[in-house]
Image: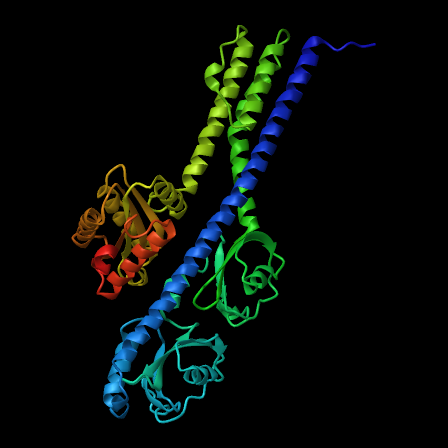
Length: 522
């Protein structure tokens, strides 16, 4: 019988061992990263769905408050003063982006005034089912979304009753929101409908009809047969992996809007996660294939006494799979070839760790500005609230940034974003954190900082931006909102919403200013 030489036997065993090690490492990394990416995507989508739901809820409450405020100053005697009514409604309609049109009707449904003004409507009774139901209810009213008979566009109606001094119902003031036209809803969510990574969100009403969707042609389509939409209609909220009505495997989170019973669904195609995972595996192969090839060539020359290095390598691979590699305990081997093999594997593991750390860093960093991103913001603010130490949050937004993009192009807009990000970073200490929250919105977390100190920091940033010279021939300003933990709220989500609401107030009061939530409530 032909015998196998020791060199051939050892070489074969080593070659098989190296290939198996590489295979185990790739399979282990693939499995671990897959589960982590899916879980992180679902968690991020759920956070986004909750935040959008809360934003929608705040917007509708603001719309109702706007109408309630106007209703206090309109009296029955004003019904005969057409000029005064027209002026009042024009002021309501033009002072914000809440409504596409505002109308006032008496208790019989007779239209007394409308803005924008349509002479053909004045003096006629309301004909929409929503307006009639609002007048019949004699109370605050938010309609379902419904199509207009002429254009088949989807609209909704918000109404507030008018009462005389004795509390008697005398009419209704209401606003129409055209979901496919420019208004506060499109302004707030239009740029967020679809993200660069393929994620998107859509909003459905209480019947499962699409109100917002990246594909505007689908607005008004009923998608109640969608699994997650069906759960929303059954008052369920959560996150899961599912297949949509187009049979696309997706990762979705869904949450209801309390005020309107609408539902927000934030979706990421599962293929997006697999694309990231495949990229990670290819990078892993790129940075480990050469070291492993060198390892194999070195080991092929070894004929004797190589059992101990392979035991050591096997132990290290097992530790690497468990994330417990301790390179400090590795000692030089007496055999030159075995020692070189061990050092090569250590180098490969170090490279893998560096690339993994880089992926983690990129996942938490905004590519354009270099600041932390929304995902990192969520992690840090949760840590800070659990630690229960005082801190303040500043939410900043570039005023009329869309005008800059439309006028000078997105490249110029990107340069403005990067410049402002640098100015924000230079205005805070190393213990504080700066984030690009999305679009033209930034967030700053100031550790052990009260709202009055945060106000000084925000004003410093605002004035620095205001007095800076940019590459575009256009003035650039920012507005800011501030809230303090735990004085204003002990809940991270609520604290952000309070600062964001203060930012919206700064916008409504003329922009280029800072509003402190606590001061605003005094």
